[in-house]
Structures are given as structure tokens and as C-alpha cells.
Length: 199
Image (cartoon, rainbow, N blue to C red; front, side, top):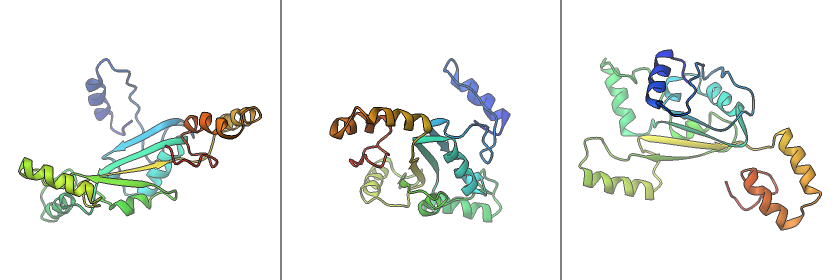
């Protein structure tokens, strides 16, 4: 999905023979029903949206209970974002002149449900390849929040009416550990009685 017809044309061309359905839409008012998708992914788009909270609420709305929302964006705490911000202040034209860079915590705060994040690319693009490999390894091992690329993830809790009916019906015949083993994977281990931290 994209708000730009031209970008959808490019995407369709790149998709080739793949099963790809381009949809024109606005991230602030998605043309989809509630609880519709198993997974929702937004890649380097949220930084161009001033009302990030509304955008994430919409993305979360169309996600099925047990489904996963993933947001990938540039990290405000990274040297890359600082460089782009400085270039914009100097009047240099750049795609990210009017971008809204956010830190990991600022991104997570856009939704009122718990999420988690990781950052990667802990080096500059002109870094020596060998040194870049070392810096990346150290950054990941230290779980630094300053990597250039920020990825946040949320899992939607709750169950749909259909799953609830299925669950109630099955619960009459499945008890204890057997019930737990069978249904935890089915509902992404997000049901309250699934305590083994899967998902």
C-alpha cells in the first residue's frame, strides 16, 4: 500500500509475476477492516508522518489479535540521523529534510501497548568494511539504542469472536497441558493462559 500511484506502479513492476496487489491508501485512514491482517509491516514510512500516534493506531487497528506489527525507520539517536538533520539545517536538499526522526522510546510510546525494539547499522557507510563488521558486532552485543536503523515490534493481544467460539468449544474437550500445547501456537501464545512466553 502507498499513497502515491507512481510508487505503486514502481512496486508492481518490481514484483513481476509475484502475487502482488497494489492498494492506494493513506496510513492515517487505512482502507481495511478491523482485525484483518496477520502481519503488518511499515518500512521507512513513519518518519514522514507528523502524527505518528494516529498512524500506528491505524496499523494496529487492522491487525488481527495475536498478529504482529513491525515498524522500521531511521533512528533519531544515530549519527546518520544527526548528519541528515545538520544537512537540512544547512539548506542542502535531501529526501529527509522534513523527516520526523524518533528515538526507540519515542517510537514505542506512539502505541499504548508494550512493544520491543532493536537497532542495527552501528557504523557509517564509508567505514572500512572490516572495522564496520567489528562495530556492528559490538553494537548488537551491547544492545545499543544508537544504530541507524530502528525496528520496533508489537504483538496484538486479545482474541477475535471466531477464535473465542472455537476456544470455548474446544476447551470442553481439552484440558490441562494437552489443551495448552495445542492452542498456544494457534493463537501466537498471546492468550492469558499461555505462560511459556512463546511468540
